[in-house]
Image (tube, rainbow, N blue to C red; front, top):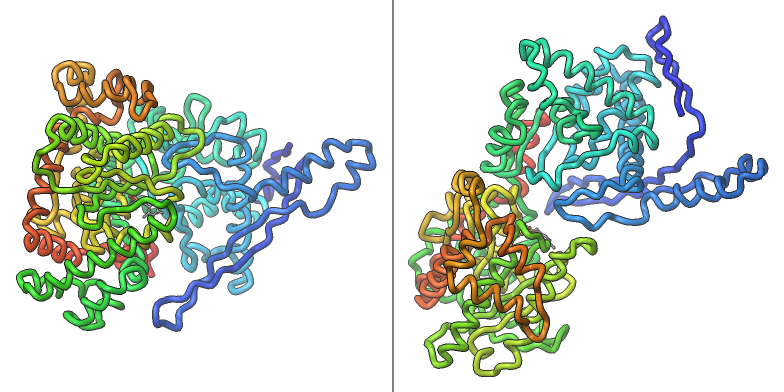
Length: 611
Ligand SMILES: *Cc1c(COP(=O)(O)O)cnc(C)c1O
């Protein structure tokens, strides 16, 4: 409960009642730059109950005293495991407010110790909202300025809107964060009332700018249908809004935030993601690092742009042979790990075709599966066919509550087992699902990869970073024109990437009258593969996956199937020309420099934080 009284002085007299206190303890991690005196601090927070509420206990309210204690202690215990999916639970909202309040309180205290005022906060501090999870930092800073420091609304809003910048990470509706107004009002009532006031003032100003178009104002409102739209709040309260690849930043302006981009065009920017390339090259691929040192010198370790010098060796057979040798050794190193951890023997003379990323329908691991089933069917019918041996490697985590994702993992495992039981086929075609996908596993796998599967439906993957790690390690991208794949294509040239499938505008057009059942009925390869899911793979049926593809296919797997199948066959054709493939691989390494996080961070510093 809170009581809100506007007094004649500037202070809003807020008195809080029936609240519970949570203590935030900082844990500092020191992060050192490569060969640099610079050390950054990453401050993490742990939630604790301050001390047992003896007063409540003495009043006889044992349950409440215990409840407050365990709620406080539970706030920072778990990380919600979803990826690109909203979890609207009250504990999640408490976590978000806890972390925002701890961070904003800390920033304000540090600033006050130096300047003794918050008047200049926006001139000295940049706060970046990385996805919508920390959106509550915005109303929390407003709360401190209004309730604790006595600023008027206009001045507080000026400071806030010149301090915050926002990065959007997804445009998919199911992932956009929304909170029920009743839940927000129950858990953080004062913060809720500030969001309502931000929205009232915003809608009023919109009405004036929109010529009193109330339908448009409702469309753009932060609060509608009893839900608070966190991304909209971020756009309204930030001086900068960016996507994480050129394509994604365009989609933000023409689709999700079309009205907002027309209203405040100066806010909308792009910063393409990057990767910690010294981790993904120097630390995880010593063989390739040595080859680069021997050919282009050591400069690339501090300046990723220098990787482009490697392109000079694109037709140098000695360098290409060494590159082939490095890949072979990395495949053997990885095969050794797999043998050790799962007793499975990988054929290191086969193509290593890799799809490793969180399991999600939009990423379309089941498109890959469908093509494997088609190849399996082909080999069953043509056991003596000439077939370049191929190993499909998958790794993925699924959120525990995402049933279809877990079915897809089970299906990959089932195919893998069924093929393994047929020695004649498994010489040519193998599938392996690696458990417990994580960065340390990636560090072994990326250097061993030859084909990088980046096959999301165009318009759904905001950027991708796995695609960058894989190209840096010499894998050739087999992908759609989605996220940063578009910029990878620009960086390596059309000859050094394999592109298939619909482009974003084609997806938008095809969605209007999409009929997957028709594709199922008319395309016998698709029908055979989906029927296999119904009839059983290694004795397990996958009716839900099959139904989803046949009846709704929300990510248009069937629409891209033929094109994907063709691209897969083309990749084998390229691979069979050993020197051509090595040259493609070399051009990918040489083109990876712009995907360094050093470049991304410089873009943020220059274009957004004004450093
Ligand atoms: C890079 C990485 C990701 C992101 O992969 P995408 O293919 O961009 O989705 C996910 N998990 C781990 C462990 C990674 O290393």
